[in-house]
Length: 54
Image (cartoon, rainbow, N blue to C red; front, side, top):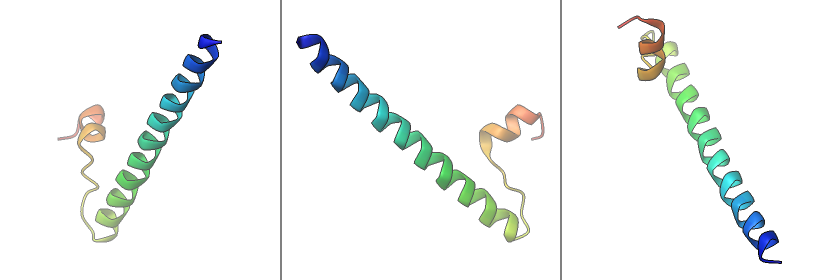
């Protein structure tokens, strides 16, 4: 029965980490949208590096 306890704990950790990443992306998107609405470049650090535009 220890296996089921470990599986449940890992499921909970995985779910929590996924939720944190999801919320972080939502916040990042809101930040970028607000910058664009103000007439500035979105300037998302990792996306601008991926596109090759600096």
